[in-house]
Image 1 (cartoon, rainbow, N blue to C red):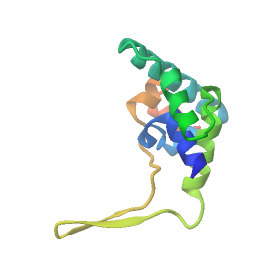
Image 2 (cartoon, rainbow, N blue to C red):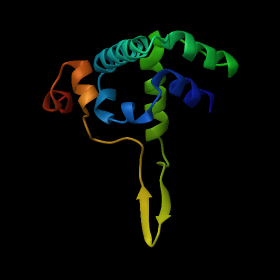
Image 3 (cartoon, one colour):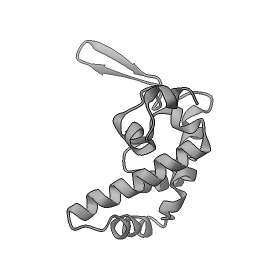
Length: 127
């Protein structure tokens, strides 16, 4: 649980790290994570907030590690947990409809991934 919380303190949103293609190549993952941290800091700064200070404060309260330079390592730990056997799945009801979630990972190469890596979907999928 601590590993997941540590990852979330750094990443913020699991969905930003749900594309399984970024985990195929360590350099690609590092590039994405470096760009991600930079983009998040910029976003916080635009609102006169300090991302590092805020996230470090959360980590301290939870007695967890805060080291943005290790985001790629934290993300890889998340990926390994998300792909281990048995694979996570859940079923939930919405009215009369039943839905099944098979995994938190997907094949979708989102806009952030393309923007932060400077690569096209085809280039990323080809790795």
